Amino acid sequence: MSNNVSARKDGSNYIASTGPDVCKTPVGSSIVPVPYSSIAFLGSAARVNKTVRHNGKPDFMLNSRTPNSMGTEPGVKKGVAKSGYLGPAAVKVTTGSVFSKKWATASHKDKATINMASKGPTEKKR
Image (cartoon, rainbow, N blue to C red; front, side, top):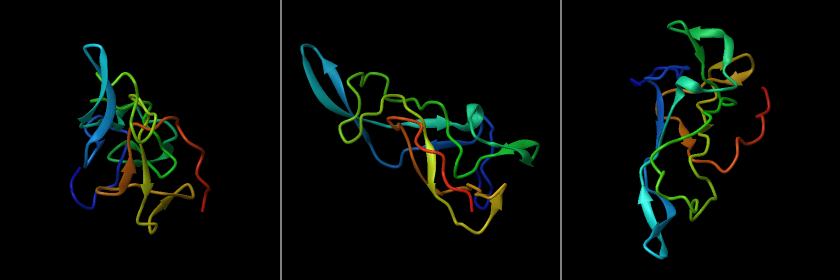
C-alpha cells in the first residue's frame, strides 16, 4: 500500500513481518529454531466493514483479521515466542483518528501482529 492509504479487503494489500518469525522446524531428527519472513494478504480478510468501501473494496479495520499467514510453512512445530503456525494477522495499533462503523480504520504502516495462535477477541467499538 502507498503512504496515507487506508487498508481494504484486497489481494494487493498485505501485512508483512518486519522482523523474523522464529519457528521450531524439523531438521533431520532434530527440532531447531529457524527465522522466517511472514506475510498475510488482505484479500481473504474477515470482520471487514461491509458498508464502508475504499476504491470499491470493504474497509479493513482494527477488528478485521486475515484467516491465515504464509511464509513459515516448514516451521511445523509452531513459533518459539508464540504458538502460531500459519495463523491469522491483524492490525494492533491504528492512528485512532479515522473510524468506520465505530472501529478504527487501518492504514499503511500501522503496527500489526502476524501468525497469531488464534483469531483473538473482537475489539471494542469506539
